[in-house]
Image 1 (cartoon, rainbow, N blue to C red):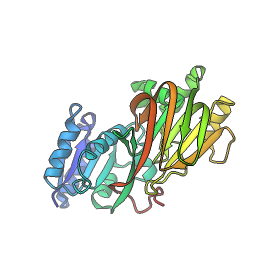
Image 2: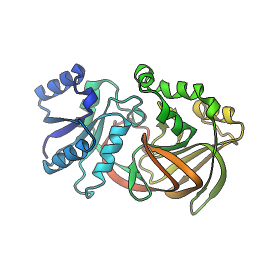
Image 3: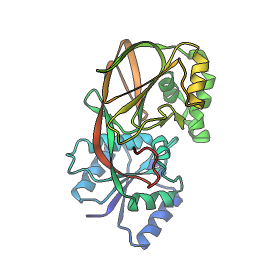
Image 4: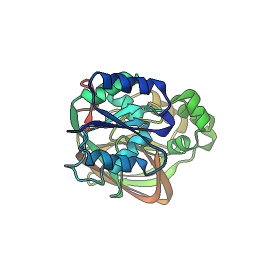
Amino acid sequence: MGSAFLILHGKKASDPTIRDAVTLLREEGSRLEVRVTWEFGDCHRFITEAIEAECSTLIIGGGDGSLNEAVNSLMRFSAAQRPPLAVLPLGTANDFATSIGVPQEIEAALRLALTATAQPIDLACVNQQHYFINMATGGFGTRITTETPEKLKSALGGASYFLHGLLRMDRLKPDHCTLASEQWQWQGDALVIAVGNGRMAGGGQRLCPTALINDQQLALTVITAQELFPSLLHSLTRDDENPNIINQRASEFTLTSEHTMTFNLDGEPQSGTHFHFKVLGEAIRFRLPASCGLLG
């Protein structure tokens, strides 16, 4: 196998901590190539280069959005061509990296990416063309993550989403929709909808606390419109059952609505009135910590 490839988000290229960590690991014998993105499309171009070079590991240096872009690029290649994936968490929230146990410290995260065992994990597919590795969220939570100012995210990180949500409670409006799988159906007014392969979104909020990344199932959490604020607060702070919170699991299901809804797929928005969610079992390999809590 060839070198590992670190695809680094352009905004982080000048961080001396990253440069020092890469230099140290190279001096210790690691074969590590670095590529820096400048504009949309660079990630896919660098992934293509890495695959042609038979890279040993593809390390994504960025946040959940960068990881999502990489996953969607990898799925354009055959399963046999896809190299193991790893993440160097450099984003605002880093929800997926946090939930699987990747260290926040740069050198430790890079060492993990280069040495950890590559394990097969699931992905989720939406409408047979868009993929996500962590979570799709719709409803009020989606509007909050989309509208949270960049300056607030820079200052407070993941906590900025929660704070901005509290400031915009006056805009709480439910979405009327229908959810259905082969085993169950629900129709009603939803405040928040979360479809989880992973567990956390919105800066560390455990919206799908029982999700696993290798069980070939998607976890679904719906916070209904009854008693809006108590339900929202309950979902963010507790894991026990609440009659206003619906939890289901399925390998695939559909969501339909008479009006346009927007889902954030790992932070990337997709809008429509019909969404088909399906899990893809063991779609990619990911270098995970030995203590990863999202494996069944």
